[in-house]
Image (cartoon, rainbow, N blue to C red; front, side, top):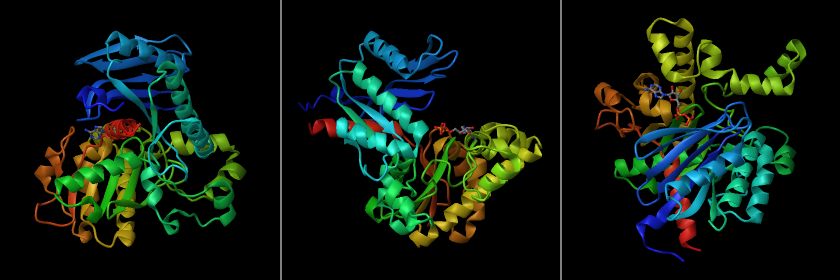
Length: 404
Ligand code: ADP
């Protein structure tokens, strides 16, 4: 039964990684986080849950090797102990890969589980964790509707010209090998918020959104819809990330296997865990650490930053092809929302598009502040827009539940 009580809009948002679980109870009415936390090192030696509630931070140690199911059980107890279960209306799951089947958020039933299972062959690590999260939540929160929100869904508006690889066509038709793109929930959210900030209809807005966190991706948004994005079949493609290489010459596989005796797992590990900012700097995957080291004269840290910015600027410039007209370049994610250094560097390289950077506005836009960081009369604008994927998940779940 739909009700109008604002309290009935509380949604438990779950984001399951292979060894972690981020969670929050969000009020879908205003995005307010009632409780939030992170379970880490799941399935390993010393798993724990850290959470924030009423301004206080608490750590719960889990038993050795305890994994997603135990973490969710502990979460249920936690929620009940704080009497937070009473107003919960749904559980919203962030699902990394929805394949071609899922173009929007859906209520989870057996057919949906089957669809997610099928799509998870395209991203086995993430898919497996997402499925585990869903089944654990179904067991622990019996009776609560469960909703899946897909990272790939926003990009399903891409044309085949943008999403097909120049590979034998059968790989697409028989196995679904194509570009899907990720971070869709974030690109969607920041595009909508930027349209509001600029006071223009999203349906007539052309944006390029750069989500720069540990994973990084760029999205070309034409008339409010995703028309291209830098991640591909998996989240490894595109621009340089914390530990991921982004695009490389596929010929590298042959070199690594024939000359250096790498196997598939080692190559996967090299490209996903040992590359990116970490690989070049030989110091860290953390942008803050890299920036501090670069300022202190660490040459490889500076090189890592330069490569990161150059590749990002090149990707943004490439998206002028589908867009032709740009209203705003949007920065979001931990790096995009905080690094004035990276924003200034990238904008400088894109000056020929008419982008510029107001030094003071750029310095001011940090720690969750949104704002225009270009000089105010110029188009395209450069915008910093904090993302809030959890709120989108909560809203989608609340809206789907309202229709039941
Ligand atoms: P995730 O993709 O895991 O959600 P985040 O969006 O939180 O990651 O982004 C993490 C990245 O943001 C890290 O590289 C971190 O160093 C960077 N970051 C956070 N704050 C700053 C800052 N003040 N300056 C530069 N980089 C920052």
